Image (tube, rainbow, N blue to C red):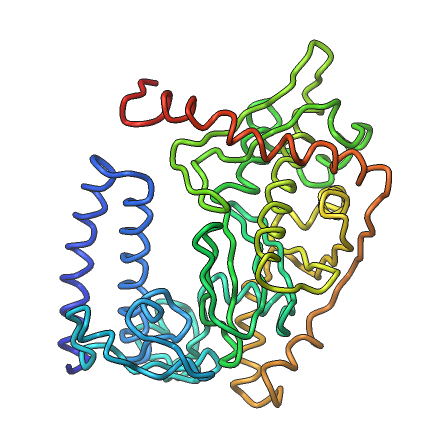
Length: 390
């Protein structure tokens, strides 16, 4: 299919998908809406690639590549009969390219709109998940990146495909053609922290102010436990009806206790995801921590205490995705000889060791935290399911 024809088709597909998103918002579940939005984003990505550099290519680490190609070789590029089995004409799909491939140069119109020089090299790059793994320096099998932005995930670099149906964890092709990303996701991570600040009327609190606000709160927040499933949950259980809660409140609980309990709840869910991941893959002792939440030394320390693992905070953790993209371009330009050399580029600015006293507190609370979902599953369904009224 010619590039001009493909652009026209993508515009039609985009308009159709907008309609499908609207219908899903009205009649569908959260999962339906998320699925349609993901399809919409993928259409936009392909159109932008063609428009900006006149390249008709697909990135090997995207979700549609996983669904429509069977990556059984190290290079992720072996195409099987899967397309014919699903009714997809494989000739209509773009040629797969690697994350470090230069796929074209910026065209005049796109350059003017972006404020960049015409002819600027355009690289394939990657998805947010793969770029954050690269930007965190997690390039070797067993490297773990705990990412906490609006959403969050525990991502392990692995050397083989695997899908854990029980815990709902799967592998995605990574930016490195010799590796995969084993990703366990949570819908709301840093978003929970933003939510609690807003609810106690401190929406403009910086991370530095947040650290000072909760500094005198002991580990465990006086026994208060928070579940971070504010928009349902994906892993290690999937339930669109699950919600957040504060458990074990008493009359002595302060606002700062609630704030720290939210952070601890997010970190305990990350521990749950890490433990689920480790049922299949061995991980290195220290974990990397990235995303906006990793700006806070107090949150870094809480994560180390909850996990009972050293936590390595990288420089500029909020920009880890951009750092990953820049590192891939360095490989593409030949500034680095190999993609695995990126690990040596990523600087760790602080390492947080677990505090034994705090570890004991969280070890006692963690089974209670996991039990909150099991003990309230029916209540969630009654209140938030199809028959529930809010």
